[in-house]
Image (cartoon, rainbow, N blue to C red; front, side):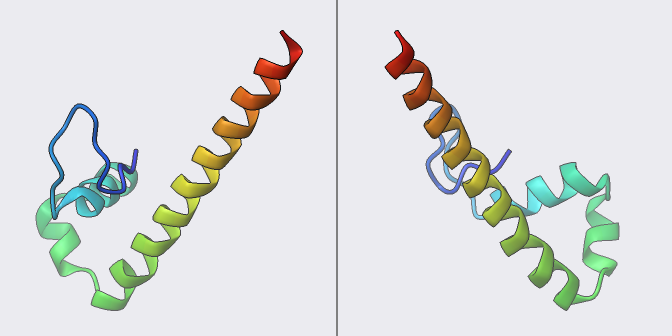
Length: 69
């Protein structure tokens, strides 16, 4: 899960997105480092966009559920 620098239970880390890539792909640190730089440059913004979209959908669902009460 991407924290976007707003971690509530974990401190902000410059490796946050890298840890998310490792978790998502199952790569080891060495495997990550052996990938072409443009691959990680492609993966990271996509994962951030996906996390943003999921957050937006969750907030919309909360608002919708709140209106039904």
